[in-house]
Amino acid sequence: MIDLKNISKIYSSDVHGLRDVNLSIDPGEFVCIVGASGAGKTTLAKLLIAEERPTRGRINIGGWDITHIKKRDIPYLRRQIGVVFQDFKLLKQKTVWENVAFALEVSGETNRRIREIVPHVLKVVGLEQKAHRFPHQISGGEQQRVVIARALVHRPKILLADEPTGNLDTINTADVIQVLKKINDFGSTVVLVTHNREVVNELRSRVITLADGRVISDKKHGKYLIQS
Image (cartoon, rainbow, N blue to C red; front, top):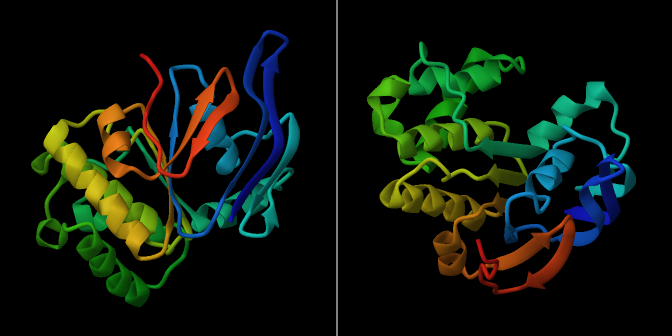
């Protein structure tokens, strides 16, 4: 599903985002990417969605070599990879329903398909009863679940969540993680980039630890062991 071979990202002679990273993630895995600030987590996430390109090495996603992906093909890649960031980036003037529908509208989906898909993804994230509320009328955790719903509209094979609970309290964090686990149970590969020790240790899923741009640990049922 995801295969990185000898990946390096060099920003300057003294700034390396990643150094000779090799890793593979199988379909249906739930993987946590952890590490201290500056370890390379964000660089890795950006490479996976082609927001940045590697300096060296090859990246293969779902049988597609995206190492030198053309700009015109990036939208197709991002339909395979749903992305959830710490910053919600919801449209304040649109309702929950409209925010999710907008992701389909910009990709040219018909109104009929939109009416089919939006209720389904809102049910997956447990927000079908709040479809007509605006972002300011729901909690931070619920806003993040809207973001997850929006990321699911194209039925991506992979969900990349980059610090999705960074701005949330403990209760809302638990709600978001439960949604991610539910999505994983449906068969999607989930890649969770996080610094949240409690979340990682409770999940007991595969944990890949980065330090100074390198993979220093890869445990099938791991824990967050990096000292802050």
